[in-house]
Image (tube, one colour):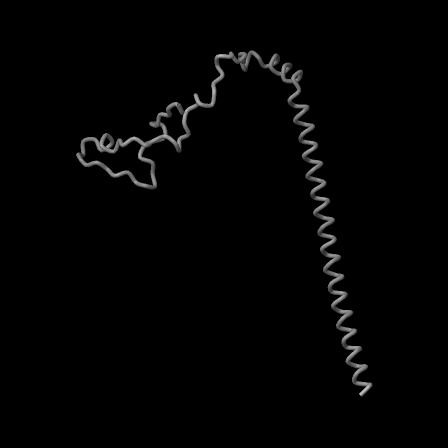
Length: 135
């Protein structure tokens, strides 16, 4: 009886060791993945810092003024007048907010039959649409 009990305990200990090893192996893999992700995050943060520094360099007023002076004959830039600025309420509506006029009879022309607009296609070309004020 003692011999069978010893064999069962050895089997249980072997199984426990195998489970422990498997858990340790999975945790090491996860730890490597965490280190890899941390390295990727650091690289992305460094890249963002580099891009911010590059943007600060590119948008320096002295540099922009020098470029404007060099290319003024080609660009023909003019200062913005204060009367050229508008408020958001003065901007035209979005195309999705513009009501679609019923011009199916006018497009039917001489055929005498009015075409029904397809629900998949807009009834009006985008070039024919006029946008109005939001007021």
